[in-house]
Length: 117
Image (cartoon, rainbow, N blue to C red):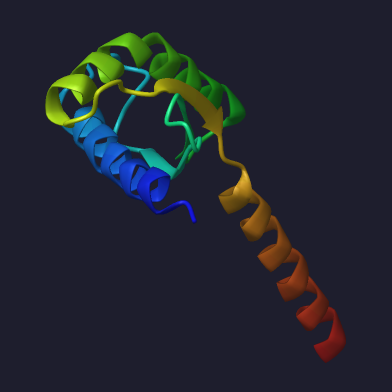
């Protein structure tokens, strides 16, 4: 069972959301950025943080680059806020699930429109 990694993942998610709102000064990281999921390895050495941002592909890539640039700051803040012996190394990845879901919904809507004609 992965109870502890899941619990730590949720805590990391909460703290990173607060840091995005209040702590990170990089203009590439703005309020349109959201954390969709955090996966922590069983040994708690790595945390993969999935981010999503509304906007163009360039804006999404800029947000990812901004988060990668702020990884050291985020990790140091997490070590200060969370009571862990070692804070996992942070890996940021773009989450395309929201865009994929919107694309599927558009296709289904289009099929429904075609059936009614």
